[in-house]
Length: 349
Ligand code: WQD
View 1 (cartoon, rainbow, N blue to C red):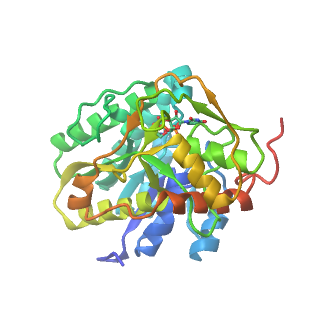
View 2 (view 1 turned 90 degrees about the horizontal axis):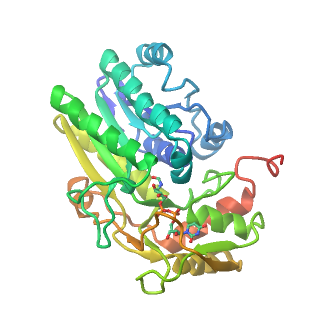
C-alpha cells in the first residue's frame, strides 16, 4: 500500500469512468491507493461505478464536475486533498477532431490548463498525463521518445501542445513531478468481463471487430492491404489495457519515490501486429468468424506504427506481458456478455 503520512495516497483520475481510466482505477486500488474519479460522462457511463464496485468491492467516488469549471474544481481539490492526478479526460476521436477542432482544443487544452492551475493553487503537483503515439511524426521503424514529433490531426496536436505546456510548467517550477505516457494502441478488457470499451460508433480496430462478432455490424472494412507490410495490412503496437494500467502504477511509484521531474515514456509492447493477424487472433479466441472486405486506405493511416518501449522497461521497471490472444479473449468475454456495452439495448435510432 502507498501509505503516506496519513495512510494511502489519494489519486484523482480525470476521465476515470472511461475505457483506460476505469481499468487503471482497478489497478490503483489493487496497489493500495485511494481513488476518486472526475468524469463529465460525455464519453463514459455512470454504470462503470457499479461495475468497479463488483470488481473491487470499493465504492469509488465519482464527481461529474467538468475540467472547464475552475471554481467547482478548486472546491473539489480543497475538500478532497488529492496527492496526485492521472489526467485521462479528453476527446480522442481523430476523425472528429478534424471536423471539430475548436471543441478539441477547448476540451483537451483549455481543460488541462484549468486543471493545472487548480492543482497549483491546491498545492497538488504530482501528475501523470495520458498522451499518445499520435504525437510522433510518421516513422516506419520502432519509435523512441527521442524521435521527431509531428502530429497529423487536431487531436494529436492537443496532446503535443499539452506535452509542451507540461515541459514549460516544470521549467518554471521544478517542484512538479510529471510523467508523460505516450500510449500506443490499447486493446482488451478486464478478465472479469465487467468493464471494457463501449463506443457507440467504433473507430478503432478491435472494438469494431468486437461489434461485428456480436452482430451489431455486418462486416469489418480492412482499410487497405497494399501497404509495405508482411501481409499488406496496417501494423500497430497493440497493448493490453491491463498492461497499460500497470504502466501508470509504475509511473506513479517513480514519481512518489523520486525527485521532481518531467519524464516521458512510450507504453507499448515493441511488437507489431497486422489487421489480418488481429482478425485471425480474435476468431481463434471467440470461435466467431469475422467477415471482412478489403477497402481503400483510410486517410492519414501509416503502414507501421510500433513502439520501442525500452526506456519504460528500464526506467519504470515496467514491461508489457499480456498477449494479443489474451486481449482478444478478454475483449470477447466483455463484448459477448455486454453486447451493447454499458447500454441495455441498441441505442435508439
Ligand atoms: C489500427 C489499424 C487501420 C479500423 C488510433 C489513433 C491514435 C490512438 C489509437 C488515441 C490501422 C486498421 C482500423 C477498421 C481497419 N488513439 N483498421 N478497419 O489509427 O493506429 O490509432 O487509435 O490516442 O491516436 O490514431 O488505431 O484502431 O484506428 O487502426 O482496417 O475498421 O487497423 O487502418 O491499420 P490507429 P485504429
